[in-house]
Amino acid sequence: MDFETISILVRLAWLAGASAFVVGLMRMNSPATARNGNLLSAGGMAVAITATAIVLLARPSEDGFNGIGWGIIVVGVILGGGAGLYTARTVKMTAMPQLVSLFNAVGGGAAALIAIDDYLGLSAAPDPQINVATVLDIVIGSITFTGSLIASGKLQGLIAGKPIMIPGGRIVTIALVAVTVIATAYLWAGNLSVPVMLIILAAALVFGITMVLPIGGADMPVVISLLNSFTGTAVAMAGFVLGNDVLIIAGALVGAAGAILTKLMADAMNRSIMNIMLGGFGGGEGSVAEAGSGGSVRAIGADDVAIQLAYAQHVIVVPGYGLAVAQAQHAVRELAELLEARGVDVKYAIHPVAGRMPGHMNVLLAEANVPYPQLKEMEEINPEFDRCDVALVVGANDVTNPAARRPGSPVSGMPILDVDKAKSIVVIKRSMGRGYAGIDNELYTNPKTGMLFADAKDGLASLTTAVKAL
Image (cartoon, rainbow, N blue to C red):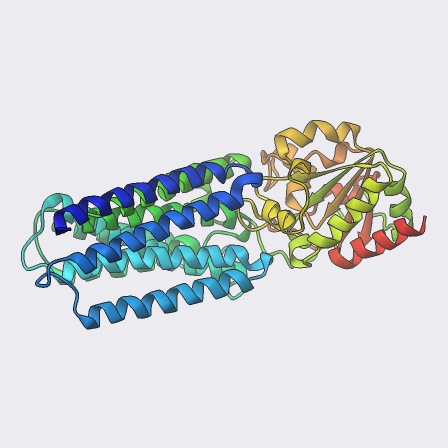
């Protein structure tokens, strides 16, 4: 079989791989099919990688790789694939957002390195179309690399979760943008200059840092989604640089999906993307709050809560990041099964920005085999709180704060779960610590609210024991 025929077959394989990406992404739209969709997309990538290896092997000897080149590829696949497999299998669900952010950094950095290597190998000014893609790849990929590292550090606690304002930050950012635009225009004009390319690279790397540092932890889910979109766009640009169709298609898919998700996340917080990127929202989760001026906090014991739950008809569980930190997803599932055995209708209210990344609560509860039909999105579950006997809030804070309905609050306008409309409210929380918005939760001083002060896992276990004893 000649090389031209092999090239045609390889392109068909790339098309099949790209089709698998599209279908896999569609199947990720539902928790019930998301796992298969992920496997299908991974299979499409395996097909694309195999096809690429075949075309490299079949390439004429004068254009082919030597032993060193193949050695680098094999070592890279072993190291990268091994590291990816290990981290994906060992990461805790609470650390999944950090891992996703690191994957964004790796993807953006790899795309930028492709463009840098291609540019360094040029002996003359490239075609304007390729030049544009190369510069955009360097800029977007570099911003994604450093920005994702900062986001991961904030989520991991290595960097303070509160907004970190850089002295003269806005001036620095404007200067970086100006330098990048001027240097980019110089290269797009057809000039070949490695020093100018390095200036663009340095400015983009610093811009990624100055862009994410001023953004508070409450906005990290949106930031991760936006950086994911950047990663896809950088990969698509790398596809244009290399003339690789599968990279263009895959990158465009990731970029578009990330951009749509970012818009949906911003809408869920009733804030514009630009407002989020300007930063300065909220403080750290660990600050201590006093009871709000609207009333006092009422503590409640596990036995009293167990009686309410056991004799209720409808219970809505509201999971939050506190549940994830305590690894309490299995404990909440055990309690729910016990209540269901007593004839109680149990549902889970999922706020779009609960946790640290889009879909965090869905994935966490799916890991504990919580039935998918019981997971209800905010728009679907909010009308049911009026008929709910007990709303059990486990570690959620800002997404349940009625202050969002009142103008003048830092969370004003943010859609919330209507927990305060339930007949009785129980909040499991370790302390009166504030959420990332840095304000008191008015739900806690509601006369209908009882506070069960405990770690989420321990609190749920005590409730399970108490219900069994009834």
